[in-house]
Image (cartoon, rainbow, N blue to C red; front, side, top):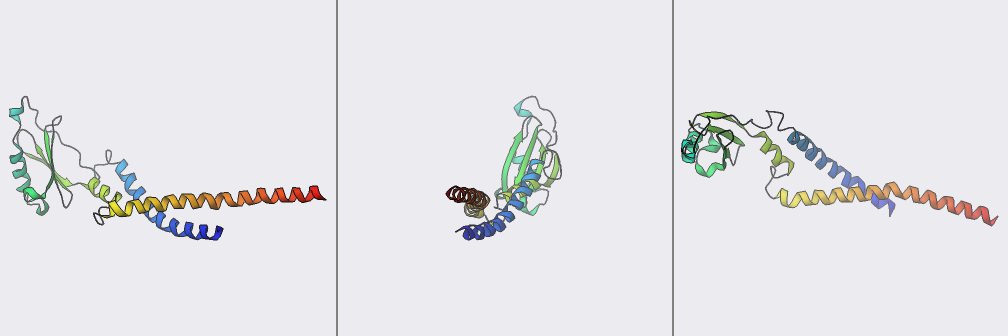
Length: 179
């Protein structure tokens, strides 16, 4: 029985180690995304506005993004999100594919920033959806189960020799008492 635990632990350890390396590395980089501009594009500051009429219409923002010639951001179907950051007076247009982001001034309509959303790429790798959309739903729970089995078998492998030593010492004392 103990040998089976060790065999299961070894196999789960290998698979779990690969998953943990990937998940921990991407998690580490995601934790730094606010401090490292190469991971997440900093939000630019747009022109201050006084009333909502000062803001340009979202259709103008989309046209500005489409005019840049980015293949993955050429039509409305390519847009994943269109966000308005009121505090900075900036629209952000993000693509579904290719991890592109365009920042447009909310008042003037000037393109402030064009870049890649590496943080989104890291998130997709982190939750395994980068490899295939169903991996997040099917593989991630399997990885969690493997890690649970790895922890459980590791505890059994660690505790078993301790209990065996205690049992051996009791048997030795019992033999000494009988003599």
